[in-house]
Length: 357
Image (cartoon, rainbow, N blue to C red; front, top):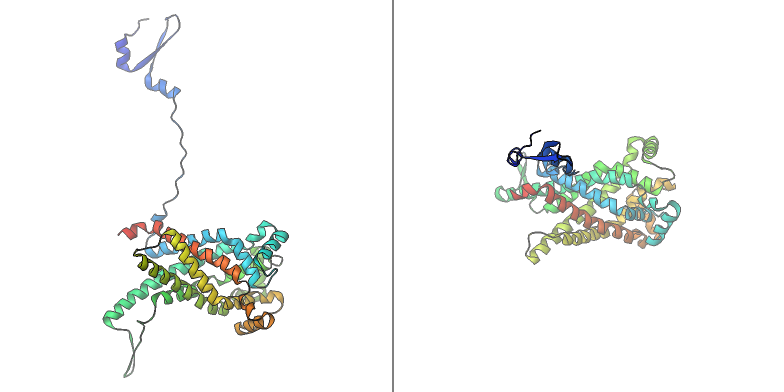
């Protein structure tokens, strides 16, 4: 057999394999030889979907940011919500540590997350509607006031009488906060009722399907809206104060520090202070609301909010109006701060391109 010269081997880019005696020679392409010896490495990559492609406009981004922020916050702070609800409605121990130990003793660690499934289902639409409505109404009111300053306030003509509606004095933030609380309450109140029943009476309502079936059999659709009017009355001052305090403190702080926006730790602090202030002001109404919502389970349900407040004062004195206030602050303050921090962070991600325009 003729052997190829060294120049021919180089010309065809091949490598030569022969036996030890030099009798047989086999020529293989270099590419084939190398593929057999050095296979390409295998890489497994996961890529998260680009949520920014789903955001068609500002409102969608704000609603989605609110939903994600609420879900992440509640997943972390569910035990505090459980302890707070038990203390407010008068179930078990009167202090935080005692209530915590009771839950662990009787129901284990899972008891701290009692009702958390419905709570997660509740918080996603609630926060989406609340924060999205707040941003939309605030933006709309601000734009309307700028227009009224140029063209004058709207007027109502009743025959020869013309009435000017003085709306320029209204705070867009306060109106937006009230609208946010009312809209989210009207839509998500049934989920709040379910969450409280699962938290307070897990023996009667062991899971979501049984809770839905029992509540419906007891009073139909209307049973899911039990306590809606006290809830609205209690939500109105809380929501208005909460958003007003957050925006006011944020604006004044940025002005004093001569900066355009808050960083993440500052959002956490300002949000916590706003939640603390709003919760302290409206807490007696929260106590009365919870009493009305779960009073039927204990065989004594006050007829209205005034009666519920009177009952608390008669049984426990004025201090009873703030029973569970510390647990509420322990839950509300981190919840408010973390929610605002997550919300602003998600807006930065989802609305980044719009903000650069």
